[in-house]
Image 1 (spheres, rainbow, N blue to C red):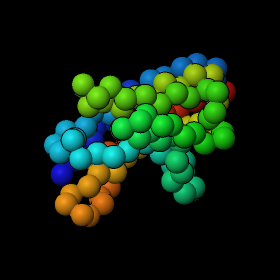
Image 2: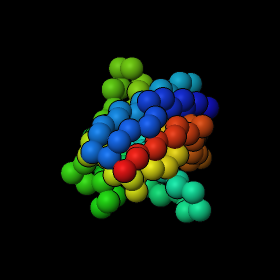
Image 3: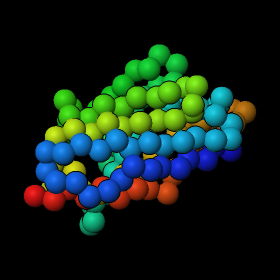
Length: 120
C-alpha cells in the first residue's frame, strides 16, 4: 500500500504563491508516477501536473503552464507543487495521486486533499 498526506494549502491573494507538499509512505519503491489534481466546487476533478519517478518526465495542464512547477524529492519520498502567480480560478481542493504497482496490478492512491483559496 501507498499512503499520501498533503500539506501546504491555504488562503492567498491573487498573484501570490504557495507550495504544496505530499509525503508518501508505505511501498514507495513501487510508485511509477505521481501527480497533483484539483477539484473546484461543482466541477470534476482535473489533472494539474504529473511527474514520472524514473525519468522525471513532467506534464502540465495548459491552464497552469508557466506558473506551476511539479517536483519530487526521491530521498524524502515527497512530491511538491510550487504555485506562482495564483489566480482566483486556481481555487480548489488539491489532491496528491500516486500510481503504483502491486505484483501485476496497477493501483492508485489518493491523499485527503488540501484546500487552496485565492482571493481577488
